[in-house]
Amino acid sequence: MAEAQVLNPDAIDETKPITFAPREWFFFKSEINDQLAEGKGVDILKALRAARFYAQIERSTEQYKQGKVVSFTEEEWEDFVNAQNLH
Image (tube, rainbow, N blue to C red; front, side, top):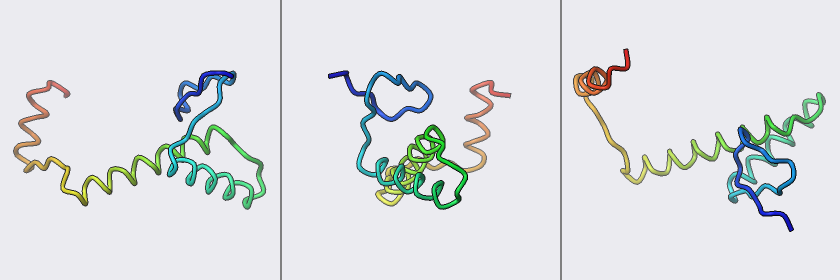
């Protein structure tokens, strides 16, 4: 049996199965159902990207609710950005 790969639509190897976290699988199925309902065919890579995106948003929301966030004032953020030479 081929070694499984995690859900990463940017690096899909068609020769290996893809493993999903439970919420990624939920969002993947939802996206496929939405595409089928639109009647325009199914774009598997779009469904993979959507599943990953929605699962990440959900995880981020949960972390925020648990207080696992870092907050900055606007001045602190500007100082941080300027220190990184991102301009």
